[in-house]
Length: 480
Image 1 (cartoon, rainbow, N blue to C red):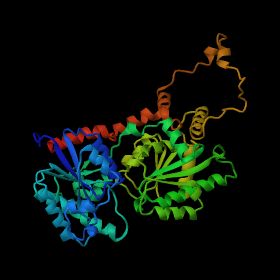
Image 2: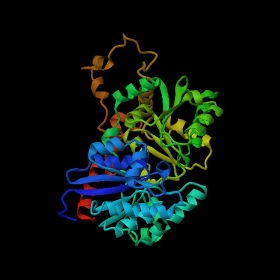
Image 3: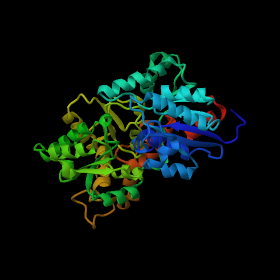
């Protein structure tokens, strides 16, 4: 494919909202050399407002309501086109619209990359027949919804498992690859795993952003458990709310003083995202008597800033392809408790723990509180553990005096020791290799651990800048 000049790639999606796939593609787009590679987008919209069963792209775009990323696409130099939304009954009209679309845009794209795998077996063969040199199916989910919709999705995806429809198959994780393309293609090595990469430095821990967002939310002295995800079945918000309710009960009824270090602290659940189930979840919060402790923040253009405001990240999804939000949370230095039903590729750093959603919400709640108390053996001696715990609580609640015996007149004992011989006795030994690792990574110190965490995520392939270079080469050559 060399020698074509600027190459245009057509990405096929359902919408251009704040979903995981859309965020990842736009992040990639922003980091591409757009003098060489340009992206266009083919999305879907209900044809009802046009009064036609198989309207043209122009007719649909005239009635389509703009999505979240529309302006970003236009500013980056991309174009947006539209197909009538497939509903299972309009297969003839849907195919006719696709054929007409590619006939109206001959030789414009060198690659068509289909992220909407539910109908990829319909639109990719038509694109190939229309003369597109390379067609790609990109699996971004490892599961389907319950009921008839899920059964229909599996049926529509089935032809992708034959391997004859596409030139390349991509998946964000092995689980997504097996779920969409099947065991044979995966075991034959005919599916390439491309992680959902993010701009890691954009999510790195920033105490100034943390302070600003916490003040904006009114949680400056609160302990904040966070979640980022659209309100839909896969994200399992009802379980999240039940877990949070148990956390509140544990802390409100701690008669044995097991969690005395957290007594008196306000606790909040901060949820970013929107979706069809949001109103149901607000009602559930009222039913669980936690509504006053829940923040339904909606979609945020500066979502990376809100990770800074959190103290912990809980993600009990029923299924995922590879959740970028868990990668983003790790980049922000947050401890994460996530469902073991999602792909293990997301378990990159020591910050992640996995637990079954078949476990009781109280088990998840106890794990969260124990993590916040630094109960597990992440540290090498009791004194260091106490110091790190104090650092964590200071980040949450602000500065406080470390000892009830400390006053403004307390002398500097290190200065008094100077020249007496005691100053040499109290010099710590040279840290061992194991201890040096503890210095560069400590769950209780997000700022100190940031470079170490970002390094591990980058090494695992989650840096969008490196991925942009790799994908740019693919789009230009047409092969890896």
